[in-house]
Amino acid sequence: MPEDFDDRTDELLPLGFAPGSAVAENDPENLTVDDLKASLFESTATEPRIVSIKVTERNDRVPVVIDHVRAVWSVNESVKTPAGKVVYHDTPEWYAEGQVMRSDLRVRMYIIAVRSSHIDNMTVQFISDEPAPDGIIRVVCID
Image (cartoon, rainbow, N blue to C red):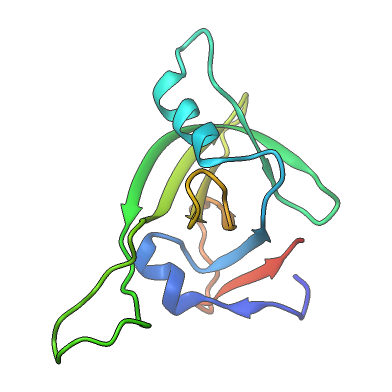
């Protein structure tokens, strides 16, 4: 694992990520929220709607069928409110999981899409039964 990483344990652990390695990409090419929705809602056993997920700086990709999505409503810290009142962003962020085609591998994703279907940032982690023993989620940017 490269030495240059972001420790995003506090952010990603409550969402369902596990200690270990993950990759983040800003403005993923060729992938939209609509693609993720189509994979989730329009896939069939004989005609899966595959999304291509970038997993390395070398542009290596894995074909994934999305099978689980959960909205994540985050607090809008920039809005000043009376004490105790919470204001959320207008659009949710997303936690998703999917099956890598023709493989036992699964991936989890945290997706930020502020402007309709455009994905601003996506963090991807392969799901493992053996999380890192040090308890840290190390995220490397692969832009």
